Length: 259
Length: 184
Image (cartoon, rainbow over all chains, first blue to last red; front, side, top):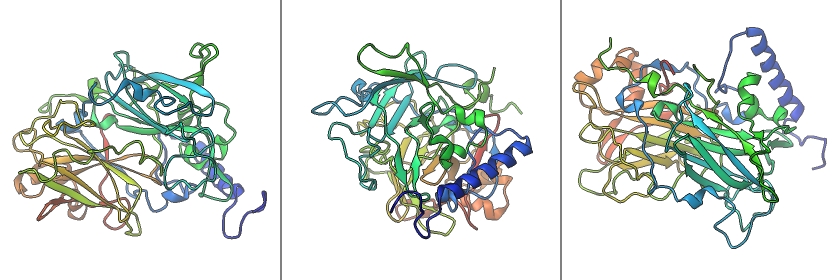
């Protein structure tokens, strides 16, 4: 297939972008602030049959939901936070440090909790049997890491900058470069899986997954900041990205018989 | 002070080499006396199994206590941590080896707290899989009592010879009730 023309039966980016803009426009006119992705977001075609059609049901958390699983030093080896190690050689790509704090809505650090990440390699290829993108695998890069937050809620990973990669949402669709994050809070209710993006990526405007967060300020919260203070001399550039979980133990923990 | 929460995003299709780990679905070793299977399918709006979903459970122990022990990733075979994670197979099936949760307070029904992730699902979903049997406790539960019968039944697991069955319908006539926690 040559660039520019869309393959027969496959929708072009222009159609997806028109849908994205129409939803953004109606959001601006509605004037009701949203802070999370829409579950029903048709430009992301895979969501069509995979989103609930009924409103989420409001409920008070029960005791078990006010607590979260514990992870400890037996679960996570400190070496797992360095995605550039553990292989025979060094991975190809821009070496980067990604760090930040995990806090709750009250600004309190989430201490000693599990953070997991996974990502494509520098060429935009995942080490996954279902990734058929004909970009090279890197024998020195798996792209999965773990760490526990410290007493200040801080996590830190050494990795390489992932590349953008094509996907099949529409013709000539490319995901912006991103790192997947899985985060636990102090309560079950705070569980978060999300994606961290890089500043000034031209693919962000075209991406229906990122744009499913229709509020511009809300989706900006997924973009890490380049931080020269984290950049290390002749070694790696640094990005800072803080994660805020919903609510917090302080706000969610009330006596059971308070009513 | 309330800081704005970081938005969620889909887990995508490529989580399998990071999130599931050896033993992730076995809260207790399979086949241990007293163990049971919690299993079911994650289904889309057309009734098809979703082969790239991930289900997590978090539960009390058989004594009703909230587990506070680490060790869910490197399990020692003895410590009950209350947490499990299972990816779905090609038919959308997931399964956990576990023990039944018990009520955390007298008179309350026992349930598994469940989180669902999938490619195509833009944010995680929370639900509950209540254990069948204790009709008085189920009837007194504030969530179940507030739901019409046809929605209530989507939250109550059924029994089979191996344990409990809990199907999760992301969409459709049998759409599972998914939760948003108050004040969060």
